[in-house]
Structure formats: structure tokens, C-alpha cells
Amino acid sequence: MTKPIDLMGIPLKNAVITAAGPWARDGKSIQRCIDAGAGAVITETITLEAKQRVSPRLFVDGYRMFNTMLYSDLHLEQWESELEQVKKRDSKLICSIWGSSASEIAYLASKVERMGADAIEISISAPIGSRNESVCNHSADIHAFVKAAVEAVSIPVMVKLSYEAAVSPAFLHAIERAGAKAVSAIDAIKGLRGVDIESRKAEMMTYGGYTGRNIRPISLATTAQLRQYTQMQICSVGGIKTAEHALEFIMLGATAVQLASAIQEDGYGVISKLIHDLDDWLAGHGYSDIEQVRGAALPSLMPFEDIKPQRRRAAITDHCDIATTDCNICINGCLYDAIVRRDGCIEIDAAACEGCGLCSSGCPRGIITLGW
Image 1: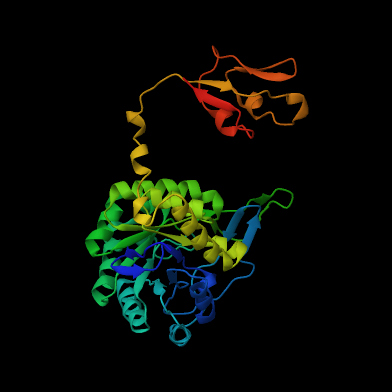
Image 2: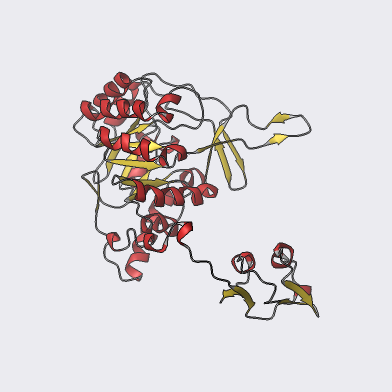
């Protein structure tokens, strides 16, 4: 087993957290996350008043998932009753809260602390709805909200960020000055599933939160940028489903990772599997502590302006008979006419090749390399 990690001064038995969402909507579902082995569980977002569910609220198209869910449909008093049923054992409980004013945030923060929360996550970045837009876009407003929570409790506070907020140094500085110990990023991205062009109607009745594996590249880049912008700890979220995904974020500087839509897709068992696979990978590579790999990939990144231009050329390392395959990725994608058909096979014209990398990264057989 890997060693515990420290998140905002709280010891977690592992770096896997379940994000705020319907998989932690009440005491029973929170318990399922705990029983699956999560280091910490974040509740569905708690507000002063219960929010009615709309139906339908989940829209799926292949790997793309959209949702029109906002906050919990339980009253604050119901939450108190639900949390009394939870047996935390060696897991930690983080309560996600949302309020329309700094005073509401302060009240909710103090309330959930008394309910047994070990930490608080302030939700300010839901991609749907129009309330609290000033908090999501103005550093002075977010400073007041975060400060109100920090001053109201003795437990640590983190803030969940939209993509836009996460890449704003001024916004991050305001959160840090207000006393937040960590940020979680990124929240879902505002999106629409599409339009039925025959009926001329949108396939969803409102904007939804776009989640799932397809947003992982955006979340990865955000994690790396956050590590450059702030000293606060980072809980990465967005498209994480496997131990390999979790390791990518940790190697870019994340302290912990949050599972979200993966639970929706595969059930609570994905939590246990990821933790088990993460331990196996670390042990198999000779690591006894996750700290040994944290941030390891950051030195390999550099500003675009610092990259020294060097001409590279593609080369094919094995015979590829295009007559026996329907793959034309390299031929169709080469804008420089450097990949040609000759005698039923592909060949690369090194003189014409610009070294863009499309063929080498897209080849399903991995037989095209990019050399000097």
C-alpha cells in the first residue's frame, strides 16, 4: 500500500477522492464511496434550499457526457440526518457548499463543520445557471466568499474552479489571499450535445456540463498551469478513469485526483480498481511513496517560445500494405504530399516531409517514427 498523503493538513490514506456529484448525494451513496476505499468523499453540493431535479438531466453521446444537474435536492436539515448515518472510518468527508452571498457561505460552512465535515469545497463554477456569475469572474467577489468561509470555520477550505478561473493568476491570487488551502480543477465545461437539424431544435433544453474522458487533455493542461501559478495544493478532476490517468495528473503536480463521471459510467467499483491499480503500478516501478513521482513530468514542459525549431522527418519502420487495410490516416492527413502510394504500399518522401508529426502520432500500428 502507498503511504498516506497530506491534503490541506489532513492525512488521507490515498490520493483518490470522489468529486461532488450524485454518487455522493446522501448518506448511503457516500458510504458506498467510503466502502470502495476513497481517501476522501466530497458530498453533492449543499445549499440552503433543496434544488428540484429536472428530467431528463443526463445526455450521453458515445464518450461524451452532458448533465444539467446543479445542486443537491436535499434540505440542509436532511443533510444533517444523512451525514449522521455515515461511518467515515479511515476516510475523510469534504462538504461541497454553494451560497448566493458571503454570509450564506459562512453560515453553510459553519453548519457542515458541525455536521462532521473534515474540510470544505466551495462550489463557484457550475457551467449552467446564471447566478453568482460575478463570483466566477471577479477576483474581489471570490475573495469575499472564500474569506467568509475561512473565517467561519476551523477546518481547511478549497475552491472548485472553472477552466477560465483556473488560468487566471489574479483570480488564484485572490483565493490564496483569502486563506484557501487548495483548489480543485476543472469543473465541467459548458456545452451542448448538438442540434437535430430536421426538427431545428437543440438536443438539450439548456446548456449542460460537458464531462468525461474527452475533457482530460484540457484538465491536464490546467493542472500544469496551476502548478506554475500558485502554491496552493491541486485536486485534479476531469476525465480521470484509470490509474494511468491519475498518474498523469500527479506527475504534473496534483496532490490528489477526483473521480466523477467514471463512477457514473462504471459504478463504485471503479474507485477500488483505480486505487488497486495505482498501488500496483507504483510497486511495480519500485516506488514506495507517491511523492516520488509527484511533479516528475513538469521539467519536460517548456514555454512554446523556448522551443528551438529543428527540422524532423518521418520514417516508416515496417512494411505497410495499404491494400489490406482501410487505414489511410497518414496519406489523407499529409498536407505536404510527403506520403505516397507505391506498388500498393506507403512510402515517405523525406525531402518533402515537414516533420509535423501527424502520421507518427496517428499511426495505429506505431510503425511511423519521427527522427532527425
